[in-house]
Image (cartoon, rainbow, N blue to C red; front, top):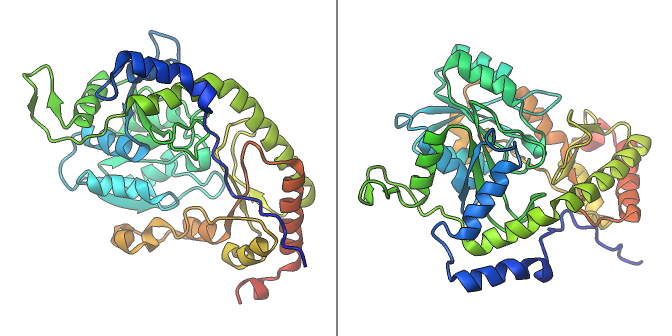
Length: 379
């Protein structure tokens, strides 16, 4: 019996040597490799301009990675030690670790059953019952947060908001009152290998982020440190990759949208029982996640899919509250997040996936979801 060819879950898409060469030559000529070099400065300007034309563009401050960007933004809020930060149970662990490493306390909340997001409405309900000092909603699976609604939340409550938009570049807008953090990790649609960006219209906060990313050194005050920071700077080499990725972004968007449209068509035609996240179908997404029918658990189907050469993943499972490090931070039941975590399954999705590979995935999912029963799934 022939072993089926493997269909990988993800294949990173970064600029090749030819695309990088002009920027690497600039680094050689400049002999400036880190510490806010010219490529980093230009990258921040390009990134900020992608949200709005000057002078309406926000400020973008680079970071060594997305998690560092979250920590820097959180510390720049200058909350009291032990401040309580509301975040969703359905997210990557870095959302919670960034809160703890900033000296604050995570408060784990539930999510919306359709968008799979922590929304302003959910945050208002938590704030009515608990002390909440800040909120860090997540653009889950690239699904953007409604920054207009979060801006109203900030205006109404006075509670600051930082959106963890790690994988949502191209979808997530910048708010006027809330702040947004992106990742440039290799698995994202816009990838530099590593890197992060803090985007905000608050120039005082972005100035604090800049200082904190450079150990807290205040260059305008005799290079003294008033608040301890970290070495969170982006190197010129990572900036070079990000520049090349931005150069290729229009082509990447077109190709990703074409793959998504075909994949979505196949899934709707052959797997109508597979639920999908409520989101803009024309967005640019780094991963593809489906919701299995009630009664089925992803972990029970994964071995059968792997036997057919199809890699899958249970993104964000277990939920944050079910990790020992964060178990004490839930403030109530989390029925939606817990149900989603059992049924969500990440499918192979990358820019070069072939139609025949998509068809194999769709046929396998259709067969398993039609054949499986709740008794079998929970066995």
